[in-house]
Image 1 (tube, helix red, strand yellow):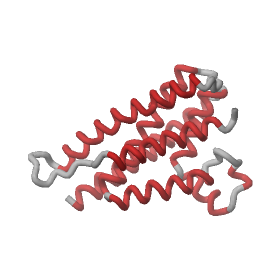
Image 2 (cartoon, rainbow, N blue to C red; image 1 turned 90 degrees about the vertical axis):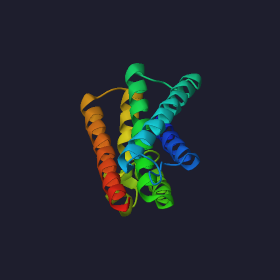
Image 3 (cartoon, rainbow, N blue to C red; image 1 turned 120 degrees about the vertical axis):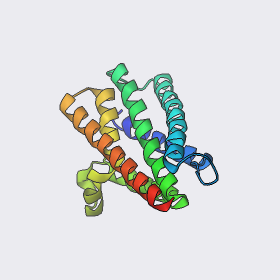
Image 4 (cartoon, helix red, strand yellow; image 1 turned 60 degrees about the vertical axis):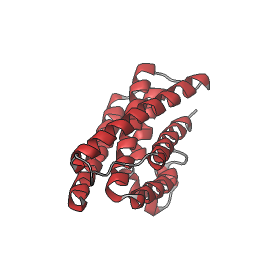
Length: 182
């Protein structure tokens, strides 16, 4: 089904959001660790959790009988998307606290309508057309769609680079904010 990539990606974003709600990012005050050590140490835990979330997504897809054209690439893509989403939401949470969680929820709301996952972006309002290239789910859906439904390398690599770029920009911005506030 064409809609399956959207729901798989949506489940990974929601899983990362729930994990960030259940677990706290580390606070280095009163410990022997620097803010960066605490940030990266906790990030490793969150990425470990994202790996298990991606396994649930992969196994669930196989149990539900969702068509997958390229299983190895699908597995790699799901693990990557889950990790990028977890790092992105963790970075927002770590740098901004509850405000970061709120930003992640607002991003979720915009991404449900503005990523072309349910309806083609061409029929959406102008606000969503402007936001479309900046939303991480846009590229995550493209990655999963290519691996699941048939691969066109140029589409896959373009989405991969953009998703990783969004992840890196978010990490750097979060680290800068964390350094200024710690």
